[in-house]
Image 1 (spheres, rainbow, N blue to C red):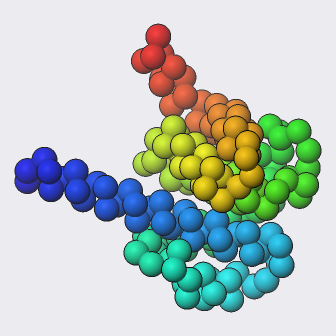
Image 2 (image 1 turned 90 degrees about the vertical axis):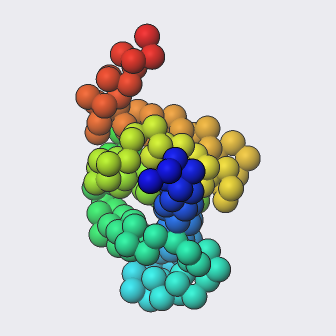
Image 3 (image 1 turned 60 degrees about the horizontal axis):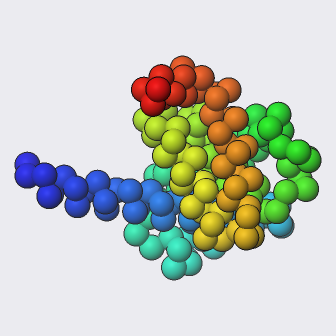
Amino acid sequence: MNTSKAARRSSVTTSARRRARQAALTGLYQWLISNDDPTLIQVHVEEQEVHAGCDRVHFEALLHGCIGQANELDIDLGRHVDRPTADLSPVEHAALMIGAYELRHCLEIPYRVVINEAVELTKTFGGTDGHKYVNGVLDKTAAELRSQEVLAGKAKRT
């Protein structure tokens, strides 16, 4: 396989994953605001443009995983936030939930990519400096949930 084909495939996969995260963020935002049934939220999001071309498997894992494990994810995040997670903006809260879920369950995704993707979601959909907050919280969460990977990354940089 030539390198340009691999690069294109990687780019398509990445953008499909990013779209899955955007769709999941949309659904989690709705859930945080309305506490609607996750299945109804999924149907609603799937009708939106944000869902077009997304990695459907990853979208479903994020949406249902974050909702199903919301309490556990909020406990992980709660150790690193300066207020109750219920008091966070829904966009920041949803981005943090996605990041924490991926840190816990998507070990094939490097922790730095998880953090970067959550930061990008927050830059796109959140408040002016919300991405800085998300970055700091997920950096601390990654150090806790993926300590060996974080330490190995720091050792490489020094």
